[in-house]
Image (cartoon, rainbow over all chains, first blue to last red; front, top):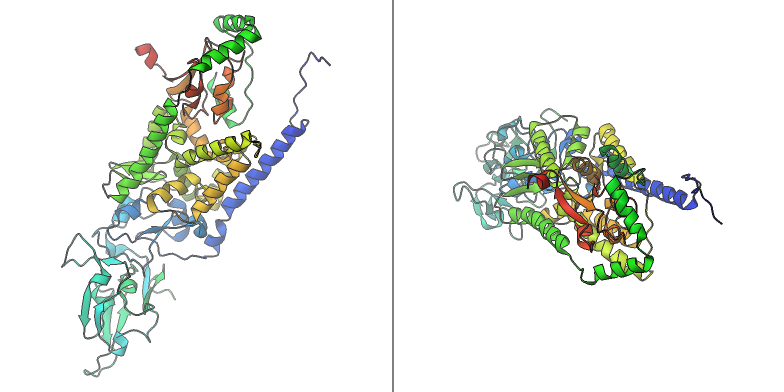
Length: 251
Length: 320
């Protein structure tokens, strides 16, 4: 058969083209579907995370973060990690696991904030006292050594714990492994002793009896929620923890 | 080819045969028509006899690996030469932000910081200079993985174990709009959570995680079902840089004169629609600049037995 004019092309007339379009629609739908899975962990709050200093409110933070990890790179104690697939839209978004490695403001200024290219870590924050990541709370008063009037000997977090902390009196520039630094305390006051922010937490006597060795840690408004107390707490699990994003006065 | 039709083809329109030719091109087409089939076959065979080059591929792979290793090593050894990852970085102090990630952030966050403007402008100028989608083939780590997957796919296809089920190229344009709208409406950088470019770049620098399972899944899918699915039909990053490359001075140029029209270039090309002009009677002029979607990967230049395709910097040839 010889046909001088080429057959008119009609997208849906050709079954091969039609199948291709159906395939494209299905695949496109599948990709969009896959991307929308990210909603679940975020909306259901499957993985609440302590965000680095200066982080915007969670919703804005997830939007503004370009997921580059520059904050991870500048942190001298490597406190910052990036989110994984199970965090949905939080993939590649930085967080701090305070029990494993808290932010102790070893960098003096807020290096992670300065490194952020998008302002997801708010550039209005210029010193650690302005930071509000959360608030410390005595979660397990029953296990707190100070409240039992007990002392503490040895490393706050023995090996194989890998977390580090800057002891300015040893080396200002090189953080030391907690597992390699030994304490000898009459009454445990590690959370107060190592807190990087002035007047954020104090040890208060539990009775008016001067012979009573028992003390209780009290968190004040200056607390920035960096997580140092949670990391240094020698009880397993930590007696004091950070409430993520809780503000002073919140329930 | 006009800028408009170049963009139209990139967005998914089928390339068309030119309506007319320049006199020189018409004469060449006519001269080629005179050559008999047997002569043509002999010519093609002879041209291929001594031709086996991987020059540009090797240079490109070396560049791609170097770029990514600079990120990795710079962090590992704390030299602070390059900080960050491919989505956003500081190179010797200069901000750089991946254009597509930056667009996603701007749409989702709706506040644009000066740093981001600086970073985006730097990257825009850089990739404009280097050709736009050069980002894809010369620095995206997923591109390299996908190239390896493509080789496996082709090897299996040659043994008739797998078949390519191509999608419509317009799918990428639709997805581009959808992802832009999703970012704007939902206020989350939706695409970033599945972007293999960001995931692989971060995995290299900060260590792999669960997200690499998604990337591996994509690669397996590309091997078994759809050749180069992500880069060809889905990735909005490619389209973003395609727009940049549409006006770039660095491009691949085609010369009709010695071309044998055997189509080896189109077989190796990620985006064969840009090489439509290499089909017999499809070149409207003797010299044709390859259009916007081209990733400047150089595979066609390596494949061409007659040197009819080459890199060109617009305007520079006249200066020299």
